[in-house]
Length: 233
Image (tube, rainbow, N blue to C red):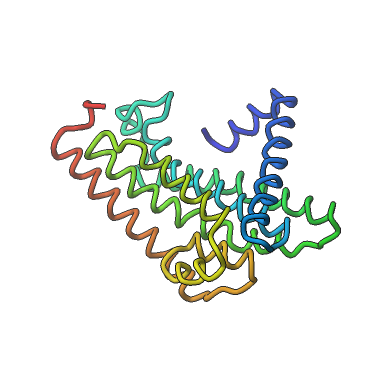
């Protein structure tokens, strides 16, 4: 669904729009309080931003597969589109990121204003949101490429999403520090909690995730077309 269609749909059902976003906002705060209890420290704003980053990352992870063959789209229909697959998937990802990242930043900003803690956590989420989103979208391309070849990959996407949420909930700061050079998501969480980040390693890991995702997806696509698997969904 394009960003324009998304906005039109939400405007038609304002009550659903309000209840969905208010519920999501409150759930993020409750999970943040649970995270503080488990870790024994941290702020509500930083932990809420961490959970929003995890939800954002999980959405980006599943986006390529949802775009390829979601509930309303068959794989054959996707390959009838005029654009090549990667530019089309990228256009969808850009639209979704423009919708998702500013919305979650606004939630953290509102929480900071309500609690009188300032704009720090919202700005931190704004700085890390887009890089983490597209790095996880790269991982989503890996899963989508595997799905093109193997058709079924079981509950792997759901397991990865649970790992993201569990990391935001319970991972200690030293653990995040050891993972940050290899994982943009861990690097983003570390920055939200401590304000510290190895910028060069963070950028390099984001670009590496994107590159690997594109290459694996193109490999899977070429393998699928060569073997004539497109109609076997």
